Length: 319
Image 1: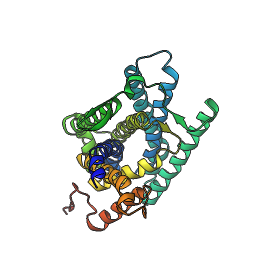
Image 2: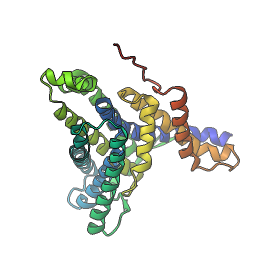
Image 3: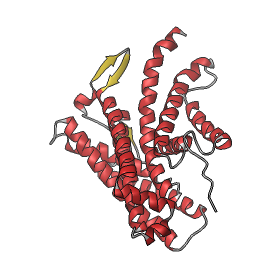
Image 4: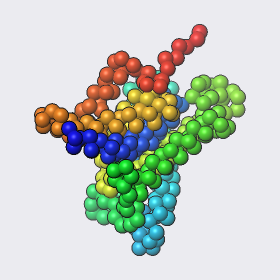
């Protein structure tokens, strides 16, 4: 028990890092759902593309730009930009035609999202296979970012500070954008009533594209920081983090920006605590891999007893 207590601060910090990754991905789900009420499961692959771009920047430019902080800035910008543009392309090629046809069946865009996920996975596999003849990529040569300090008995790498800092900046910027800008007002208007927003001079299709751009960029930045923190990615790396980020979004209240962050942090802590202590507390009966089962069990229980999420509200439509 004494050993477990000694490990607890480090485990809580590791859970915080994982939670911020889930939170950043969940923000992308929340943005799209808030406008279209669409669960964009292809967002997992948007995140994956960001992680691949991040590793490729470090692998390709290290010899030309030896400063790892400059490389990280370039990786974040390119990862966010490429992922955001990919999300816009997905919206225009896959989701917009369905809206134009007036599709009412919610299963159609959901199945389309899964199809887009497979297409993006195979596209990245093709490109990486032609370029490197390998699918599993490792982050190399991050230099000073691997250095660490010890605070209150917690081992903290410099890159961990960056992950937390960027996550907080993204949350603050997104909250300001949605709540304090004309674009945010337009997004909220389209989310509430696209037809009325159109009559007020707002182009709903343009706002939807910008929402996908913002959500995709958030996912891309999350992918870059994930690759920096956990060092190894593949075309399949987005699946589990994406599903868990969706769980985090539901946990906090789907469509709720602060809720996405809270849900991500809660899920990250629960998963990390379970992965560390479950094998010890159960005498090895349940291994570390059961942390994934626990995450989805939380989702099931939440949908049963509080489907609106921790910070969500049940909104009654007035007639």
